[in-house]
Image (cartoon, rainbow, N blue to C red):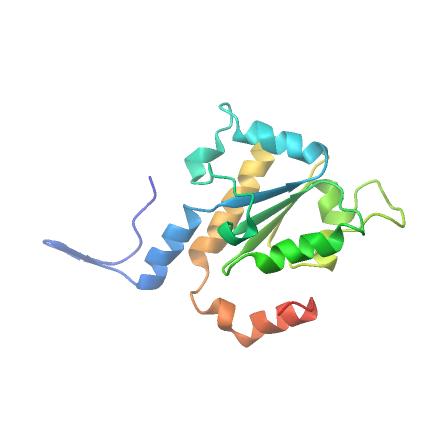
Length: 175
């Protein structure tokens, strides 16, 4: 159960800001889109299982359609040929959207310092949370998810329309 936002209370009423209510709703209903290419995907599957139970965070519905997801979880090695596809998936997601780079390969290319491997997905799309490890344990995945929840809960409703955010997207050549 989530904590109630700060507000004014009295006999028979409770008042708070719309921004806080929307933040709580967004944080507790993230729909992840798993983009798994290697061993990090197996750890994500373990996180979905009964022992770690990602559903207690409101993320039990993985979406395999970018138009119905708001959290892109990139897991594993991303080849340079695959980079335009990852970017296209990101662009198809509706705002607000968050990105979690899971594992050393998605974050920095990992041990694969070769011409064919993208050295971090932050070269093509903005990343909100990095989960380190090779592969990261399910506890680390849950911690990364909780960090995304914190971002979603505390983000202003108007942030996505700000000039700073538009400049960030423009730096990645995203419209």
